Length: 515
Image 1 (tube, rainbow, N blue to C red):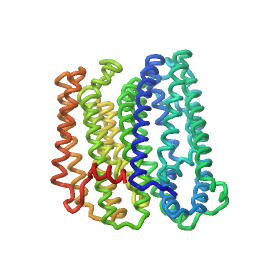
Image 2 (tube, helix red, strand yellow):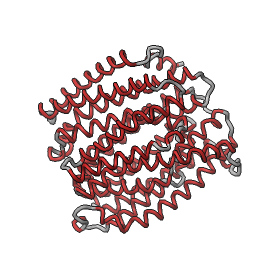
Image 3 (tube, rainbow, N blue to C red):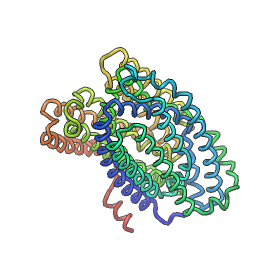
Image 4 (tube, helix red, strand yellow):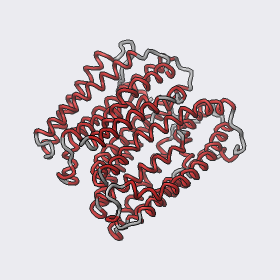
């Protein structure tokens, strides 16, 4: 079905996705700057609050997208067109029900939105309920026709989906910029998002129909008992994972908005936009190979080979994560100063906590991608509950009873990562996915955590005490910090990387790609 080798498919998907994401990131910064200048920081904070509230409604999705992707790997490898069509038809039905649930849930939530804003909404001069309904419409449309993207991802054609998504996003941002200058209207800004979402999904639906015409030919096929059995077994794991992810990722802006105000949300949103942009570029490089991992997992290669691929994947994704996070800690103050001015720059502690949270979250991604690629949701069914409880209790306590503000909120996320995710997620992938030793991987993983934390602490201290906000100083600090991070990484691998496994080799990868 797919003539590309796993290596070539992964490389093409990664390069296209990361390049397109970088272009989109530039557009996001331009659009954000104009948004703040035209509408103000309060509207930016309001938009961030909407996104968090709608994230809670996405609980209805239950993580089915990832489960469907995993279910498609085996029939794609075996070119079982009837089963592929059956799975996609089931997916279409589920997502229609989910869209309806999100719509009804959003309508129930709408009257309560104004009461979640500290200081009231009188100064905003808009109807918050109408604005939230427009944002809700965008989320509802995101579930219609989008299920067909999953087939592209599972079939190692993610670059097609990426080009579609980024192309329409950039077109939408350009249109939003023009309308912001002309009309200065928040409603219109949100309405454009709805239209672009629908157009993007409709276009990708037509593309998939042309690439996979048998989807209509076998539209009445039934899903095999094995897939149904897998779904029944893993629904609990998917449910808890979705719930935990929503609580962990969705509470930050909600707590800040309720206890501190929209301006605080906006200030944090500027940093999270930088982090999100970097994470998306980095994530496209790392996550774009998930379908190739799943393809490998469904193949007949030895467990030793699968373990070696996993360590190589963890090696390169961790190096990339650490270098990007250290670069953020070194240069973000300089960037924000040039972008928005000194008033929007965080001091030592918030910047340190944000940077540490960034690197800890990034280091997890390769393990999470293996969990998704191997469909290990059942084994992770209790983990998100413990993770979310630890995060919520620590975050709420610190933001309510201390003056830490955003630092307190993120300390909760860091705590749940270090106490729950590092050990639990690693155990699931190594024990049940790769069926190999967990302890030696944990030694390598923890060494990366400690080493990156040390480099980031020194970097942020240097930024704070040696005028890191100035451009020349910021560039110099960033260069030295990256060199220190790379040396640290190489030393840790000499000590902790398994000696019986070949390390990642970029030269060998390029040779394989050319072949």
